[in-house]
Length: 119
Image 1 (cartoon, rainbow, N blue to C red):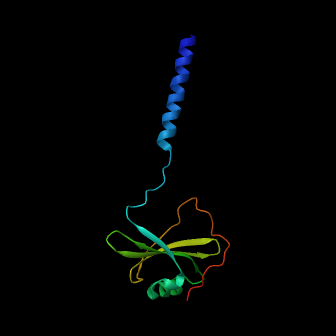
Image 2 (image 1 turned 135 degrees about the vertical axis):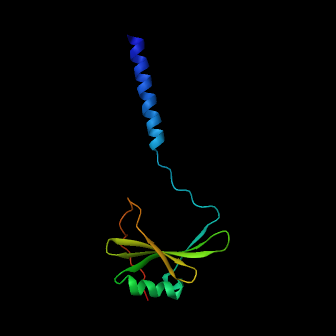
Image 3 (image 1 turned 30 degrees about the vertical axis):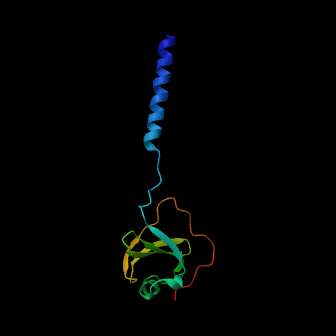
């Protein structure tokens, strides 16, 4: 009886450990060779600034990044905020709008810091 109980407990612990290992979330891998540099809103291409001013009324630029891949292709990632709303925008090297993506779930609301106004 004692042997059966010990075997049952070992089996339960092993099952729990395996289940935990399978559901463990791993951070997303950063693609090899990407160079991500934070830039000022004023350093964005004019077309990107114009797009934000025309299409994101009331939003301010929270953060902007220049992304360069190993082939030398440049894109710009911009986070804009309006109150507690946050949007992520992607532009090509000329500042032409590419796509808008939803913030990842579990992201903290926008920090209460002065954002750079859109010009």
